[in-house]
Amino acid sequence: MLNQLLQQLIQQARSLDLEQLHLTVVSANRAAKALYASFGFRRYGLEEQALKWNGQYWDEEHMVLFLKKKTPE
Image 1 (cartoon, rainbow, N blue to C red):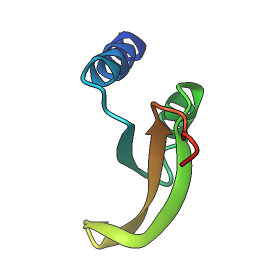
Image 2: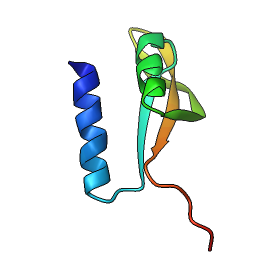
Image 3: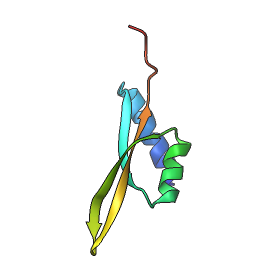
Image 4: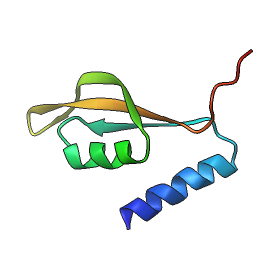
């Protein structure tokens, strides 16, 4: 079900002529990172100690999916 929702989101973004989608994911969440990577998202940054919960810090990874290819200028 989550795969279908993500696919629909990407299709909707393309229909709106968006060029890229960005997201953040907790670095320790391997399942989510694998899902996003399977749709073509790539990591472009890391924000250390981005979240704090119950006294524990969590890093977040920034990911992007380019929906359009770059055109030469």
